[in-house]
Image 1 (cartoon, one colour):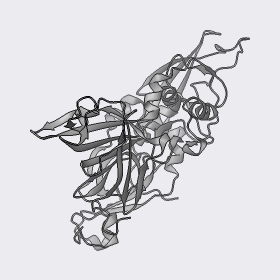
Image 2 (cartoon, helix red, strand yellow):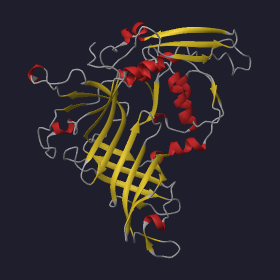
Image 3 (cartoon, one colour):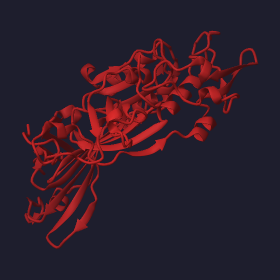
Image 4 (tube, one colour):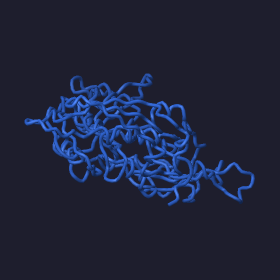
Length: 425
């Protein structure tokens, strides 16, 4: 591992391009930058590698002339690519056969007389398999068991690379020709954790495919704590470990509450109609956040909930009674009365605050991790309170990018949280 500060350039142990029937090609020396991405919105990880492709690199099979990789291979897409990068905080290792990437696009983004710059847009093998494998099977039982079955049996992902939070509800459905990743994403809003509010995320990190309840993400212990003090108090190039936990640029809040949007989405109060095709009865349920509450929050109780006197959103749903049964049952299939309003509330509330920060590279962090940030107070009496107690606190990593180039290594994070302040139990 690197002994310098976390912002120092990383070491490219291996960046290898593999095309069937050809010898592997090392791209370590020519690589300009590597960007690696994870997101709670994405069921797979992605990456972008930019490298200089000089003429005379490899021999053309037909003519024997020395040409660039792009021409002689030829580099067209669907090639395998593996890489391993070492940093002060650990390794990004995608060299095992089951987790190498596929080249999705490979455009030339700059061209000179004797060389050009090529961008490799990389996707996971599972993303490609998802489109190649339409599912028409019928699934029954607990949603969490179905998710495990889809990942391990259909996509053939090993058990140690699958993390699924248990659900309390069952759901019977058919694949309808969709891919595994698309099916699981559709299940997220319909899933209810034991003793929690509806709403899950399905995503991939460097360690596993994860199907996680929002309430469980909120209950995590912080993975790390980072600080912003307006100006760095010491040179980032020094060996001080304290610098590894400083926010490098001013935190940028792209959303800091949006009351009108929350009202329109029914975050605080909604009216929900459910039509029963068996009895032709329409039932109505009003969800009220101020009365029904929310099980878990990252900060203080949700603001404005008590101020909403009437429903601001109306939802409609048709109940499913035994549509997949050979001998139809009268029981309702995963009644939306239990999850529709609460999942809308949970997703919208979690995105009440969105903040972008950049920190020294930390490859231990993953999408979905909880981190704590301390933001300097603007008070002129900092001895009475050094940090902003409203915007400091716990946040969930929504998007993550590890960036590596010849000068530095940094991690960019998009963070979300549901309420202001620090949660105090």
